[in-house]
Length: 264
Image (cartoon, rainbow, N blue to C red; front, side):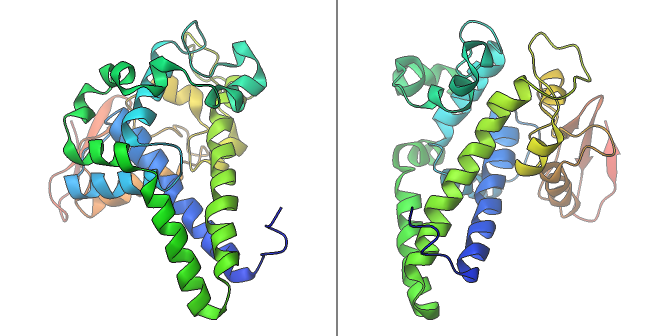
């Protein structure tokens, strides 16, 4: 309700910039790196991506990854946390609201993230993930006030509006890309590819491709299936910050920042 009254153009820029930053934290960090290990990167880069993912307000890395791994294990079957088989609104939004011990209590979900739970940084981010958005909120208000007395505007658009937009974009992958679109691969679930969800989610909407090749860093497999997250991963590979980039049928491995990409 505050959004129309707190609007200014600089706040819109802040909103879009943080949407991209937190969005890549989720798509490239939480999803393709931490969940599926679609590529390898230095620990510092991994932690930066995890911090950006935490800014999305979608929970800490351990729980987010655990829920997504459960989704792949039981996709569109009994045990899937957010399948449209339980209703469109359940898949899109309602699944997130009730307390589910298997997904919300660390003693239960940590069995799905044994690898991450050994890392003290990821455990720290899981335990204190709520502090990062709160710190960002205070920073946005303070800098906005210094910038030109627009602290409230930057706070509303940089935190509340941006978080809502990113939440619904992420949830569309759970709902829309299991209902509408086309299927390129005969997976055991009902996942689909949906171009407009892919645009909103930086490439995550090519969901049928992803379910066919879960470890692939590339979700848009055809030339016209735009996958911005994969392009950024390849950029990291070009500067030597991403190695063993998995794509269907091969692994792209850049040996050095200046070296040539080879397929293994």
